[in-house]
Length: 63
Image 1: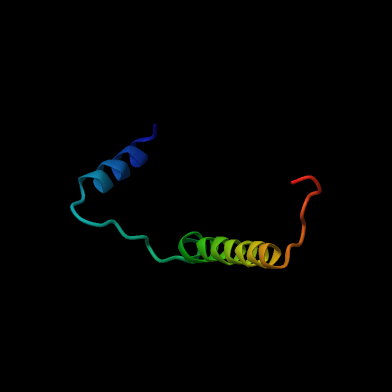
Image 2: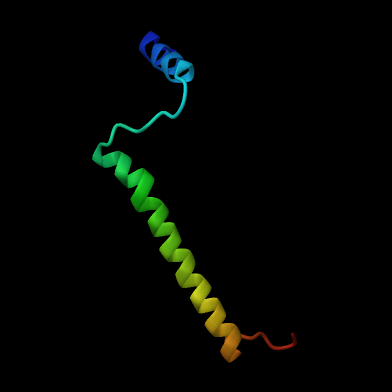
């Protein structure tokens, strides 16, 4: 492992308390946009599932 990576890891591990992201645009994508996308997709699937359950749609015969 390169020395600069090892030094950065040791500095982060030695830090007391919380370690914050730098605040670049890539940090916002990984910490805000992706979880928000997962949340929106999950809420859409949940809404569709509840709608299907309430109206009896998408039933398989024999169950």
